[in-house]
Image (cartoon, rainbow, N blue to C red):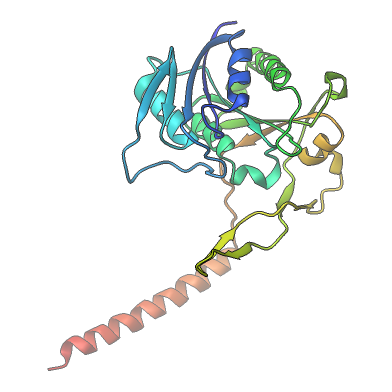
Length: 280
């Protein structure tokens, strides 16, 4: 198997996770690296529209981008690569991205951009303790095996606009990884209040995101199927996340009542506007 692979991340081009992933992916394809020039953690799927984006070639098929992970993927596919990649890989992120975390994650955001542009995309993260993870080289090698398996099984034909979210548990030796489980997204939010401080001049500043996260099962009876609990049990969590938003469908009666309310309001505003125009 020899694929064209686009690799990005949100920890910056100097991240050890990026280099470990690049080394592993080179065994299965030609790797193009487009990575942010600095840390864009928490940038989600944001793209840069209000100013230019500087792109600097720093090696063979390797570029440093002054922008978000989504910028990196977009510019790579729509601007610089001679042909679209077969897959997009974003990672390895230092720290897990499970459940609602993916809404904030720049790592996941880069993978989303790849999926929206028609590529089979992977977001890869590793649980850390005090910024320390398991052996990133092993994480990269196992990820490449997972990717090979899924591509050989024609995943890209079965799941359009899907991101494969891969999370590794914290481990000290390879034997501690028990295997792979396909999981569902948990529901979790930062449990602490936003943290308020003042600088020496008395000006306020804030930090979002405390140390503790609150996990809510949302009436899911099989907790073992949730990604965060899969990690807790020492397994690699693989979750297939579709980029399509679900649309709720309120009742027809609610639609009629709301339409009537707005129509009456518009009539009233129009009437008042006509009265003002008629005044001498």
